[in-house]
Image (tube, rainbow, N blue to C red; front, side):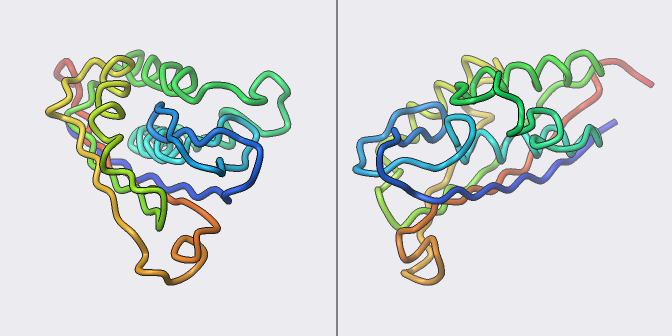
Amino acid sequence: MYRIGLGYDIHTLCEGRDLIVGGVKITHEKGLMGHSDADVLIHAIIDALLGALALSDIGTLFPDTDKKYKDIDSTILLKNVYEKILEKDYEIVNIDSNIIAQEPKMMPYIPKMRETLDKVLKIGQHNISIKAKTNEKMDAVGEKLAIEAHAVVLLRKRRGE
């Protein structure tokens, strides 16, 4: 049995925070505002994984009202969700994702992002696609006010049903 999940996230850029995307610290004068480290890519992947198995969403599982998640590294949240996927006896077949940012350029960081995600998910970097896009200077992303990400995951039951 196969299950598909779709995830999306957006965070506002702000002063005084590190920019973390895909578990990688990116050199930039602004970071993303959020309760955790605000890793927009990992949050989209988490929502895709949760959605594939109808396990709610990131905000329900890790509420921003809970102090234990304040400034937490999103790879920790991803590991927690991955364990839930395994508990349900599913495995990740592949991930396809987009990071949409007018700046900074994401392309140089994508190999490290794929490596970082694979360290948590152990599915092989060849099964993790990350693409970098801009919004051609349109909307909040194009005006350099925010960064967004989209992710699609395919899960497969590990044993027959």
